Image (cartoon, rainbow, N blue to C red; front, side, top):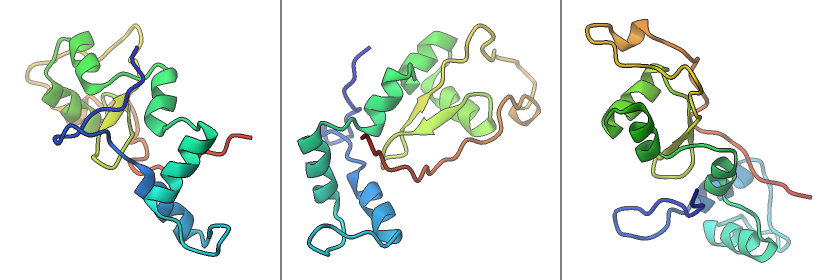
Length: 138
């Protein structure tokens, strides 16, 4: 299972650091120099201390990308997104580009049900779409 973050349309790696900087700033945290955090500062801290990205942490927990989930269930990637929005799949936001990683549905995955509305097939309550986590490894 590769641990590389997904590439965006420009071909560069996704960078969730600005979101974490915003979380820290909203909590009133400041750097050692008394300045507000920036995405670049968070990136340097992660790099210096070898902290894993949210994407990497979720992947090591066995989460699947949208493409992997689509292959596993035999559906299109658009259906994976629709099923997550409808509560049939549990997805976790992993970056600023609204890309999700999905929990393995286990031995009883949802199946296609022609003629049955997605709203009638709810499996999970909505998972937080905007987690306010900041990694702290001691």
